[in-house]
Length: 430
Ligand SMILES: [Fe+2]
Ligand SMILES: [Fe+2]
Image (cartoon, rainbow, N blue to C red; front, side, top):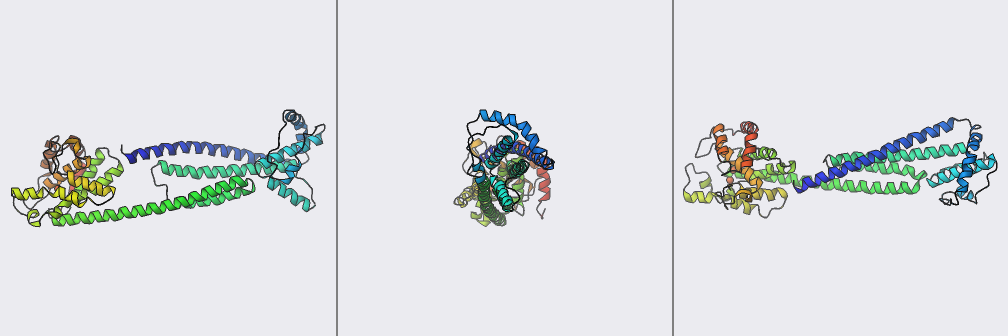
């Protein structure tokens, strides 16, 4: 498992853990939202004259109980001038009016503590200015409280569901930084501003954090686009290089393409991860790039090569390595490795360095099989193409000596695919 695969696995695990947490928050939010909304609606429909008496009767004992055990409550009186008015020494509850007043005070404090004391105060100021009455009734206060909690829960549900969908993208291994995600976050940040009436601090924090994230995502999307463009240009350059090499060398037509496709299939079968597979496919197209440095008379010679000429040909991996030496980027780095290693043999009798076994890169060992199979099944200036079955057997024969046994095993397992690709990308002349 290479670095990027490990990182992806970690992200997937973290993403899934967050999704579970966010789902729990969402479910709790939905329950709270539904129950408070239901409470608000129920209370709204209870006739006004029933409520206070019933509540007073029921709560008198309760309030008396709360009283004896609390020497407290000085929280959040800064939210509303009305609330701070009610702050005083614990009243002695002797009758239902005292109980009602105290109950009202408690609800107001509760409203104040979740931040929507302003709404209640505002309405009370409005009412008294209009000369209707001075204070809100218990019923109205409870309804405001229910609306506030319900709205707050709704925002939390929306917030966690958006985060959840982003985590889903992450854990699926898709790119999180998209313009679409940035826009989603911006809409979400505006929605968070609605909370300002009920909970100004939370609202502003959620608004700013979400807005900052939306800009980060937008910047991420921009960088991603740049990176994509760079790799697209890199890919185009690589293909042009490969074409030049093909034209220069004796190889007709689609050798480079076929070697790339065969290498990809073998790499897949060997269990390399997707990213590495696509890199091998691209980088392998440059395996013979060093042939650009070999004189055309040698490359195109229609007869057997002399020892000297063959010695010159054998330099092409080294030339390739040099040509690609100063180019940066993952794919180019791999292309260099493949150019250097594709004529090495696992028994150490290859060239240019005579590396053996695992000293040869995995990618080099894969391309070696793909390259030889294609050379055997293709026409050359000095030979006719071999029958594919004969070439297949030749590769199997070389397992453990010329070729890596695992690579040959993968080649054998996927031979049907390799053979049909050979037919698909056959040279026109054949
Ligand atoms: Fe080569
Ligand atoms: Fe080749």
